[in-house]
Image (tube, rainbow, N blue to C red; front, top):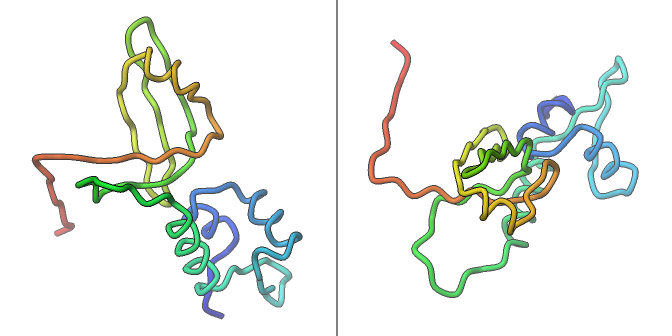
Length: 129
């Protein structure tokens, strides 16, 4: 069976397992079952949802942005001057250090959908072995 266990699919999509179960009940997500009764999300369903979510993102009119990662805020740690924002974007955890003022102005909180945009002058690549 070509697919992902529900926890794996949730991680790839950057949502909680409960969200996938809700989508399944609402008919927004098709799942299969193993002979043992475990939910399996077909690979095609994961690809469809990712494609739909990307298409639903508003297209910027003018931008050089290429590296954007939509996800869900999992943690916001504020101090007097700065805020550390963690976003789970599919299987990737992106951490951003921003001003406290910006975090407050955006009313950032865990559970909110957000997009991490990465602009770097240097990218390191590491491989095993």
